[in-house]
Image (cartoon, rainbow, N blue to C red; front, side):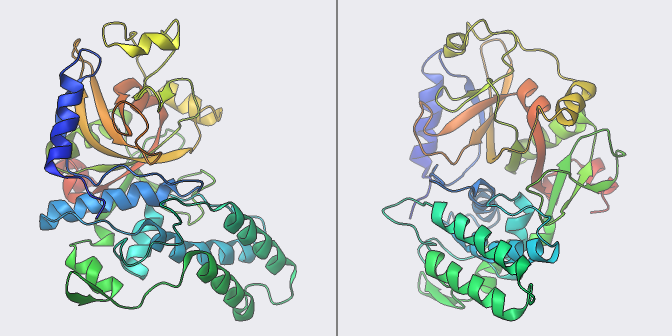
Length: 368
């Protein structure tokens, strides 16, 4: 089973505290090992599945490796059907958001990776051919008189079965018989218990709205809070043992998987300055207006979903969220990165957290 052991957690803490090169870890919540999404556009499933793995550990005290591709297999037919019903004028691609995974968990359930590997070959995934086939089939269905009729969708289902495999209706795991729904329930996962938050001024604070990003193909709603409250929600969650699924813009100079950092780069003379904490540049103060302008101008786009699993501080007292990426373990921190607070404030698109991990006042305001 590909899971994170206490020794792995200890090794991370030692690696980043033994040298001035890395910040001191303050919070390091349990998560499965960093893995790679391979050549796929399914970061939404990898990040949120990792998030649910940590949730299951928080609830049951046991760490299990869930299948990322089970959610993909549930969601892809829905994306094709929605594309067809919108006459081809809708998002059709491999992307998605965290609520797609909780929706799949509600509709189908959860299965272990050992039960459903979703077409994984030699430990990796490549969806180039599959994504092309799904788009071709969806466009063909738009042109057919039957549209989203059963016959056309049956061909989509058969193609997905060929590439990813048919989803199991039941299975044995660790000596116990399960359905996907019973396994989800045994893990303590209640899909409706997860809240999605964002912070933008083109909608009223204190209300939900459908976030206008292309990969929100399911038209999921986010509760809109002020920027300070968005940041505080993550601090509160981590301090109380809850991890967070995070959607952000990463197509900018400040996000460097190789270096293990995500910072606001304006003050940096060159990228090499990020190499040591002593040389880490001061970052700009990010307010609500600055963030909104970046979103409205499409400087900030919905690029990538990751998993916030902890918090750290550098020698100057500046704090960083620790994220688990899904690009493999190929950096100095085993595939994790340190995200500065200015970066988080400027580049966050949205996040998901268990409702019990929210600050009490916010949870009450949301009617949860």
